[in-house]
Image (cartoon, rainbow, N blue to C red; front, side, top):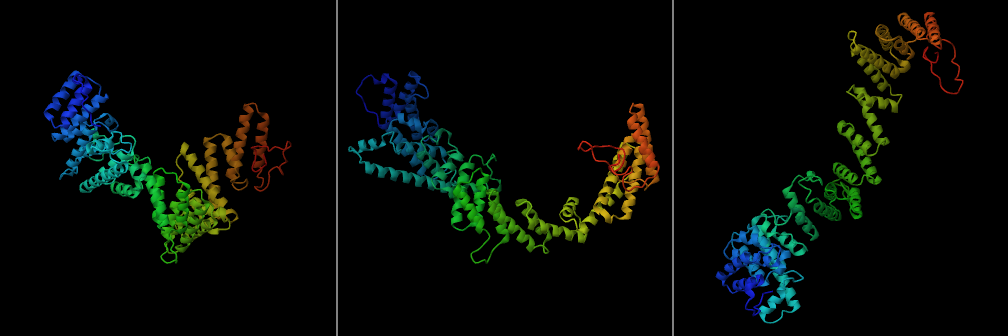
Length: 567
């Protein structure tokens, strides 16, 4: 409210008195008196920046700067809205009117400081609680009280005119909804705390980005927010909660997208709806129950038309993938996605085998062990075997486990391991040479195991030769127990190779000597018995010492003195 002359002759002796004189001089247009009074106030009364008289002084300085055409200085001097309660309402109104007139001039659509000044002052004057008693000031100027209903009507009218002016300036300057002066104005009027700081007015936006985004969502302008944000960041796939570029707006933007997604479900725009809800989830939103229901409804209909014409399998799969990612625990979505993947994989089984495989493989990812997808992939693998295509070993082994009667798979593995063994080179006597020999034996053994009774005689011969070569190498470079360990793996039975039998017999004899030297006569005696049996050329089949007696204690025993259960 405008200050009045109290009739006290000595009021200029106080800080408040000096300010009142300065304010009255300003309002009477006696501007030559205002600055000396302010200078005297500054010189005689050193008040803190937060003191109420300092706030009034700052506002008066802002008004003087504005009158002189120095609007940047006016914005710098202007207090925040919370501090305007101490100011003279006449001065606030005078400066507020001047700011709007300035903005109405041609070419002022980029003066952010002036806009911030106008926004803060008018938000204070038109506040619903009328903290500055602007209502009362209007009554004084009319010399009659303004009825409440007329005041409310005038307040709404002024608010609307300011909104229209700021919006027109936004359009002229090309500002989007996030940086718009209109958004800042509405946020300043709606927020209890000040959000526009004239002294810190930024041409790129008068309020922080996240605050502007939140305001747009709260006031039903989510489409404006999404459009503005999309124009700034066209790559929506990069919109994530943790990305530094998107963190400020993530919460408000995700809420806006979730709302638009529900609107699109109601409009039958299934794919777009799922895309919006998916992006909202990436921005950190946990879907509410109604949003989850929207996902389920979209999942049931995406890629389909009411009459079946124009159905799109690709669109349906993409949509179901989005729905499954949003609701990974929903079995109905997983089942529908799996079934659709299998159907489409079957449809292009011959025309596009690569895509068909991807469909079946994805179906197994969604529903592990799905029998239809597994069977179709196995059919692809059988076709690969028939054509001689390049295949992964694990895939063929898996097929053979599921279908032990698959002869092509068994033959492929036998040939594969045999070929690997053949290409395994034998190097000179080094530590690596033993590893190479053992690997070759292992590969040939795997080939033999896969082949079973139908083992190729050539493979059998190669395995026997590899085992003998390894046994001879171990005899020359390793302890006798290593040779015996190879023998006990039952890779070659006694009687097949005299050289192998001699190598094993010598190993038992040598270990018997070691055991005698170590004070183990019993162990030495058993090794010599084994050596004698092997040297006697007992047949390879059956147990050398007859049937093995069962364990006396009921616990499995272990003895390393012959093949199978002999020792």
